[in-house]
Image (cartoon, rainbow, N blue to C red; front, top):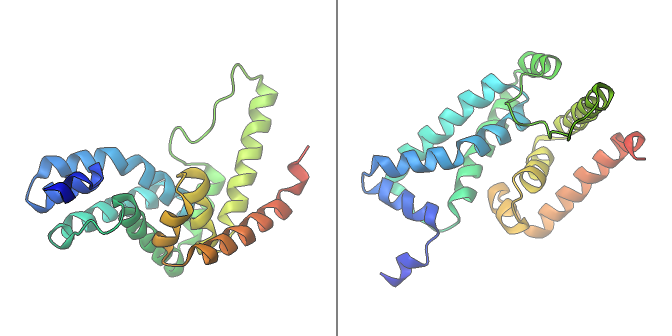
Amino acid sequence: MAAVAAIEPDAKLMLRVKEGDAASFEVLLERHRTAVVHFLYRMVQSQAVAEELAQEVFLRVYRARASYEPTAKFTTWLFRIALHLALNTLRDGRPEKWQESLDGNDGPAGLDIPDRNPTIEQELLHRAKLDEVRRAIAALPPKQRAAVLMHKYEEMDYAQIARVLNCSESALKSLLFRAYETLRARLAHMAY
């Protein structure tokens, strides 16, 4: 019983799901759906594909409930599933949908960081900069993109990201270094 007390809250919920508690699965879905959709959107650059992939992520979580063991943080396991689905989708290729979503800006609501009482010019400049940053991140190789998204947007620590990407922390740091160097070079003109 003492070992169960040390388990994180999400893992406790997943263990209840394993025992057949559907309400616990609903709590996990509600708690993590938005973060998963946002991560997937940033990976595949299409809201429709991100929503579809998020459904598949949670379907896989539910199907795997019988074999679930809390050996890592629940979110590590969840984002590993999301990452693999995103990488498979990118590898299988749907570039026309991604380009449409970049051009049409069909991203999820709430991704823009609101300014306080911005002027129209400030708002347009802000959106243009955000779009340019999103495009630069989208142009990174998939593993670098995933690492940057988990590090900067999901605020995961190095150890957790390394587990999701199935690499060492030093390999992750090298991957992030290369990604940030590429972003610095692509976005150097934006520095004031």
